Length: 394
Image (cartoon, rainbow, N blue to C red; front, side, top):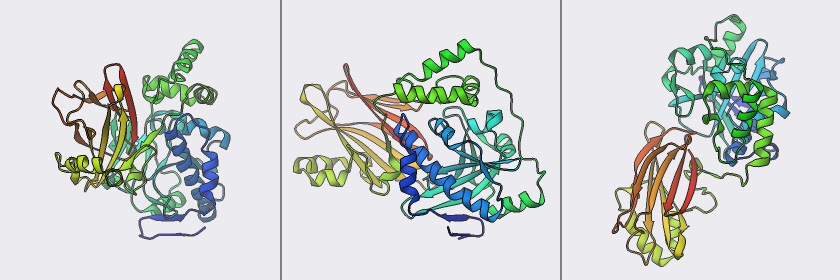
């Protein structure tokens, strides 16, 4: 394995060619496609980082959990812990290329036995086969300077506040082993058996797509902290959640890789003369044509009608993704069906925006919004008793 400090502040590590195949095999047993992808990235991350840290700094470095227990974590939460003596390093891999902020799921900050000393921001580039560790922070800094977002239960630290020089971390480990790295964490409740059983039954239900947001954090944290309960919940979801939820990965669209059922607007318009004419109007509709990437999916409605769901993406200067969502009729229909709805929901299923077509609307749209990496949302198209939902991950 090779490594280099491409910049004095960053650590770059090579991903071995055969690791991708191995990681794919290790990321199959999950209830959601997003969980499978999370496991894939985390498996690659620790399989690259652990041998390196053992060779360069800490031969005694180990994984916090056995391999058999890692799946029950990645089913719900992003992150992997490497232990060096009494210090815990939490690796947080993502495909996002921006360094605007570091996001840490609340589980790694507020579950007492999960708390880390150091949190490493890791970018994984699967195309070029490398990962980059561009900065780190401590638990104490997250608790005192981080911004908590209750919508997705995560702590955020601005990129300017992240410690960028990775060499500082290794020097501190050698020269200041007693450095105070952890802040105060409130204890979690001890759950009665009856309440635990009720939680397990509720959260393993297929209708609960995002269990970590479905109950108060004190209950969720107490449940997840117990390895036996966490394992039970993981296996119950595997057996009960069918079919597997598919999340459309918008980051891959920026590399011109579209998910099944989706096509780029250019590909779709070139494959049909009627669509080409119809979609040529779309490009000028309220700036949609200014989007950096434009994807389209055809949705069949009752009574033989169809509509086109369009999603446009633009990378903002601050590293966030700007998203446009529109619904259009197909050639042969001048207007959308009256009363058809376009709804934007958060990961928690809370409705953010909802628009409904009138009798003579040739398209409807969700106002443009910006979001950071690893943000999840859903778009629902509904007409009378019919509805279809597309789930997205930035």
